[in-house]
Length: 316
Length: 218
Image (cartoon, rainbow over all chains, first blue to last red; front, side, top):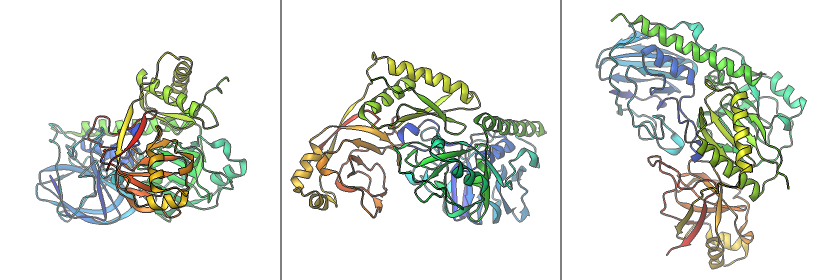
């Protein structure tokens, strides 16, 4: 078990999300940074889709109620275990009763904490992820509060060595200014000048940004678009509402919507956008769908590399 | 009339949207729904979800095992076959949803439409609706088509919280709110029917193409 001793402002259980319920109007949801959650699951020797804690907006503390091999990743944090610094993307052994503390998230937005065995909450619609707008999934469909305890799955028979560290070059470049996009389903509704604006301007992440979507601030895209008949969207889709300012849909965005989608963030780069804080800026660069899918496969193979290195580190 | 040729477009790395036409119509919607049902039934490898909408359907797939080029060709061919075969009737279901017409906007709707409350109720419960689309929130079904005399624009100020089970109207559509959510539709009644339950195998009561009748209860 893990007990929340001092809850941060935001703490939920997440995994890869729901891939077979969109036709019922259920968004994919799941971790905002799918790369980070898979990578730290790989580091601690879990299946890549194991549930972990998604932590944001500030410090807090949790207690391990059993011995546990854990790792943190995604956002960068000043974190300690019983007073000792916890390094990112590195396995750390905690004894039952030890307390893990995040003093502060220093860069990025979403920190992931994975323990060997994974968080054991009921699977709903194929996933352990919390879907806050629908109040289901994860731990009672809500954020974790001080005093809550979440169960952990059984510890695997073998696990990576303590101190196993995943090299930084296997992680996305979270500081990259460039976020790659492919052309969206309504690309033809935007003229050349709109495309130039989108790809040649810096866009700032607005404070109006959450798990549903990130509103972007910068030059408006000249367009006189009415709302279109609704159709499916996806995390990463960049839609242009009436004010011409882009909104990037994120994990919990509704499955359908009526704004024109000019572009879609490449899944390989979606973690970079997801981890950008309000006030941080990005620039979009258009690539082809072939390039984008290749980039995603490279990310996936990096995660498999981490998995293999982690399992070889096991001293037994 | 010959249907417009299908067009495919990538929606990011993991989805393809197949467009069936450019103008909304009941006929086009039936084509989209029936193609979506055949795609579901075909169990095409690496396909995760099929989401039908007004002019298009979107198929989500696993891009680590199928490239956009491969999957879009497969899906276009399957949609083509589906639209040209009249053999398989889409297996839509009929639902009856009991409604207490006690909504907080019922009087205001009567005033705005110039009808009596009794007339509003009679016209809302007096016809069969078709599920156009699911979305907005899990299990939220957009139902068409509302009696012309009941069609009002959405409320200027959406409410921050509408209770699950609220029966509402806006423009040419009606719906039941499946969860407590914000909303801008006019609330005319409520139902005990559970529209969405994540613990059920089919979590949403209604599916695209299904028909619904609302039955007045005291």
